[in-house]
Length: 72
Picture 1 (spheres, rainbow, N blue to C red):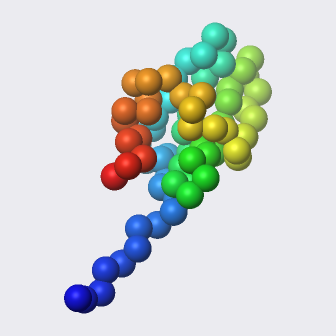
Picture 2: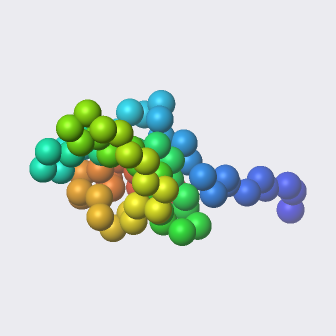
């Protein structure tokens, strides 16, 4: 049938610059793991940047989820 390459499990999102505000926190999406539906994000609060590697996809706002669309 031919060679069909497998899609990468990771999607890098830094170039797309997807971010949103939650309260007084600015959350920037860094990468998305399709296998576990987990995100790597950076959270900026009061000038302090913190990196979270296992942020759940379900915790994102609906508009941000539509931009990612994990079914593609």
